[in-house]
Image (cartoon, one colour):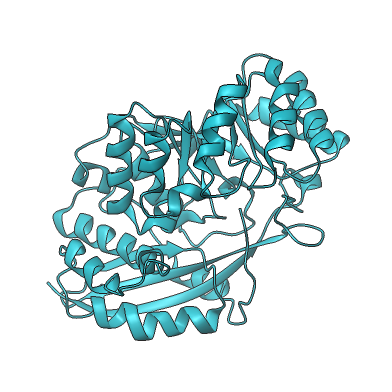
Length: 381
């Protein structure tokens, strides 16, 4: 079996507005203007010489023109003509540049996902079986939402309690006092039974981080995510010593060796990882093994993921013991999706698809309807 063709489809969908039960405009410390109101992805359709089709998805962090250039000049030459089961060899061909500043593995993550889909379809097994079998039958969701005003927050929390969500993720990092107020309000609205995590996207310096965690210790946060800049692991270790709020990293996990070094420096209580930013499912497996050896719990990140990547996340999370924390997700708030049938949600969790490969069916008519040929926007989640 050989890979014969790779086609990329840039797609876009609206994000459901807050007043209609969604999360738009989604505001975080790194969002520009009024906040995010639409989501984009790059879908990859990979076809083999015997007609098996695999689907993958990647959030475009570059413009469409640059992403197409990488596909033509790097990804296609490394993948076409190769056996889809030879993922290690393919990744080596892609990541062969001798420059530590350029991590090419991110840009093959969508195609790598499609290769796993092909392997599952070829063997008639879901991806979680290829990874050794499921350790859980569903993936609990951390409902991700941006910064809201008090009235919006009260209405949203009432909605989420009714819908059965047990974990909430929100944003911060612009203003310490506002973040403190919002966190206390969230705890009051959530009661004792819901977990809360707050992502600062590197928005704080040490004095701000100490002020925030000191003021919210009684809010019983699941963790505060990436409050300080990347590559400041010694500062993270100091912050942990000065507070009782669990500290997690996210962006630091995308630096080669970042998670390992954070563990070695006693800098974190948890980590938020993303298969896309590190090179795909196989790279996520490696990080999960490191975390499990260190008894460090992981959560999977979200980058406005649509149905294909969300299915890949669920398949992988359900097979890896270390990924025991609920997964961040905005999938519930997308107006459209390229899947023929959406991933099933039950009691605030995604049910593990049992079909071969990723366990989903892509509706190519929906894909064509969602095409975004003028993609120029970058999103930070």
